[in-house]
Image (cartoon, rainbow, N blue to C red; front, top):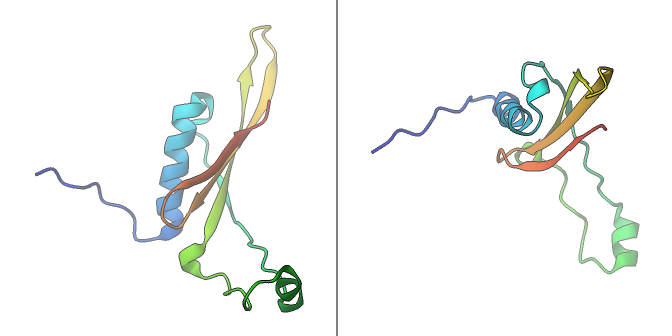
Length: 106
């Protein structure tokens, strides 16, 4: 049987590894860039807003198990015309190490 790769115990480090792999696959020019990390805030509607929408009760508060992190990779690339163009990629990863969203500047 093959061994499963070890994942870091720190959820941010595990999410960073997933984000780095995605950036290396989609945007190789940013593969060596160290990202900045920002916890993604979650919007929770207030009780009156939930009642107005017909929801049963108050929404549960965001827990670390539902945490998401946005990693920003900033670098540059060269255009076919020889110009240097800034390139910024953002990858959002959830606590289960799934990619929620990946986007880049043009």
